[in-house]
Amino acid sequence: MSLAEKMADTEFLGREFLVWLWFRSETREGVFDLEDIGTVEIWLDGKMTLESEGEERGEKVICAGAAARLKEARFALTKNKKPTQATLRMLKGDDEWSFSLDSAWLNFSSLKTPKVVQDVREDPDGLFYERMFLIEQPIAVMDALFSRFVELRLSPEWDAEELPAMKDWILGRGAWVGVPDRPPEP
Amino acid sequence: MGVVRGSLNCTRFLVNGEPDEGFREAAREKVVRYSFKRLHEDSDQERAVGWVNILDEYQRGFLGDEYFKEPYIALSLRVDTRSVPARALRQYCREAEDEIKEREGLEFLSKKRREEVRDAVRARLLRRAIPRTAVYDMVWDLQRGLVLFGATSTRLCDEFAEIFYNTFELRLTSVYPYSLAYRLLQDKGLRADGLNDVRPFGLDRGAES
Image 1 (spheres, rainbow over the protein chains, first blue to last red):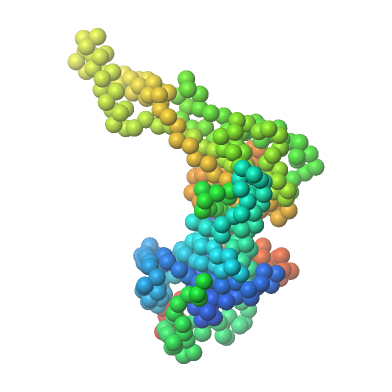
Image 2 (image 1 turned 30 degrees about the horizontal axis):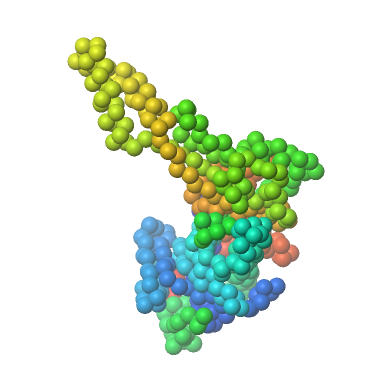
């Protein structure tokens, strides 16, 4: 199988990861405890793009704005559409990042880091290392979360617990009725 | 926009293989060889691509091996392009064709002749065009074998992978969900074969069932 074929064949992994991340961030108030990283808060914020899979591939829904709170996006999930791009915010300690993540490559775009302290004229290398430190953190967090998702996806727990809970959340039934539908206070 | 300042768009690559012993010496020579060279004002070259200092895109060449920033190699890919606006090209071609017709007493110009005129006019105008400059940062984590490139367009990523190979003699593979999952599972000492059996779940039918 060529690289392009393999990519197309497994593209759903990225889409499912974004659904799962959304589910987890909304039902656990955005808090994730990650090994070697610590506690981070993550929530979906702003624009989300969802696309159909299978025969209806190509149909696209774009949801934007905090006011919508992604209700349309959640409705689209029930219509066999999954996220292909989502805007996320991440809080770690006092630092905050925002970025978009796409499902096809898990590429970051519009990644905004906390402000740097170093001055480019006084210490250019210092600025470089500080920026790298700030850029690598959301990447490491997303890798850790993706790793957690993949491990769960391959485990019996996925079909037994995670997927049924996620379906309940999508339909707003069961334990997820009345789940806070807002991002944590920064 | 990039690693050093502004917001960042980035694609990740895995480096296939590891640098060999003489890598640093070879890199010093190759980075200079593939460094950015400005479009010559007398040429009709449309595009110039090459490495520049990530901290100073306007610096000519490199002072030393300032791009080695342990444990990284950090460079920027500068891409200068120049083009002739289509309307300006049509205008100047028309004027050139009219001049030839008048000088040679011709009613019409053949297709071949018009193409020659067009190429000559285009080359002349290109020399007058001011290049557009774009810079894309690249950081290679030598310890982890990962590369961060500050662009997401396929064309640019392909171009970057080629110049990376020419410079460092190592191929890059784009990171995508399956390859990342495989690598993360292996890093944890877990079996990754199960990934090949996973099939997408349907939320509509499943959710309603």
